[in-house]
Image 1 (spheres, rainbow, N blue to C red):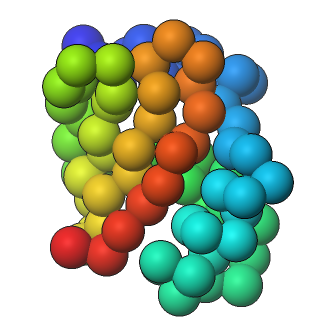
Image 2: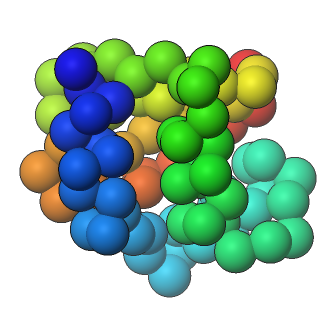
Length: 79
């Protein structure tokens, strides 16, 4: 159910200037982080849960935190 909400609002998913560097550093990636996180969210094995004001996307040993009202990717970490 939560994954459906994120997919329906996929065009609203974004991050901040500070978030770009933080996500790249935490995940060890060089590519553009919003597109990277969206591709992770679209995977069949991505699990989405909601806790408080955030969605948490768990997939491929990483956890992506997305604000549920603004659809801002706050951070992402390897798990």
